[in-house]
Image 1 (cartoon, helix red, strand yellow):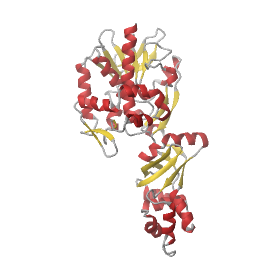
Image 2 (tube, one colour):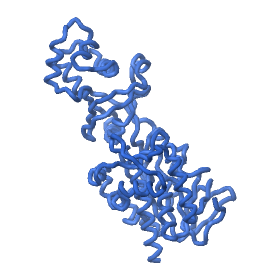
Image 3 (cartoon, helix red, strand yellow):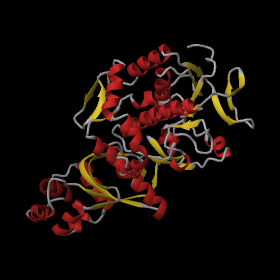
Image 4 (cartoon, helix red, strand yellow):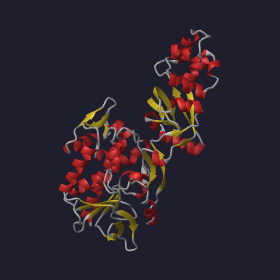
Length: 408
């Protein structure tokens, strides 16, 4: 990588998807760009996210896609319309990472992993003149307004014509998103909301026997209900509680309920394909001498994991009448105590609120200083929505920077 900066280079701080996309768009437009990254390599979280299959985006229609952002749609919509899921696929194709649509509608590179795409992306950025300065950490703004950047050669004081902060959120700090930027940003008068876990697991104090026997077991084909609505899928019993895609879909609602009330309830339908009346009838036909496990297997089709979960949550289930048991199977309350720690979460909520940012992703209080990605306060479910919005805000910030420089 080139050792020196171009004269009057735009500074991009942070080498995750948002920062890399901004550098891509800026350099393709002929702007000199230097990207500063605190870690020894760029894209570390991007690589880990793609270790078991890089979910770039989703193939559903744009209106449904935008709806997945919930309350954040109002502020993210313009950026996502500027870099739609189809455009993300075209961008990946241009890098030689042809994509395909999985059975769930999620979009992946044919190679599945992130590393081939990232290597191709970095080659293009270098060909476009982007300079990479690794092991360089942004330390805030000096009294003279210069950017203080600590690197192997000491403290640098930079005065770029425009700069982008793209440091990421608060999850996976060992990969670089450690929130070290929060204090310096607050020092320049910008509000930063505390980070909270998003797309995370939740804790429940299982009995020792249940934990020992079922930790790691999947609970398949259930419907889960919370304030986020009703969603079907599967989750995993963990040693500390529950995790998995169905849990992540409810994570924001569960987290908010715990913060407000001290606990949250996820209501489970263990037999999505059977209505309650049929279940009552099937249970009534069972021999009362049979064990609860056999009655549940024959009448409701419950596997050992679901049966054990029902027993764990309703210890007197064997004494319930067929009607009561059917009601419990169709609406099993799973009480959760707390979210798993932020450092374990897939993503985070919190960061700089959109009220601090103008429509071009520039900080209102600091002309010429832009932000993008997860350091802004929004959250999205898994399924490609998070990564698409990171790329889209990086793209939108780059367009904002070009417009800003043209106006100077």
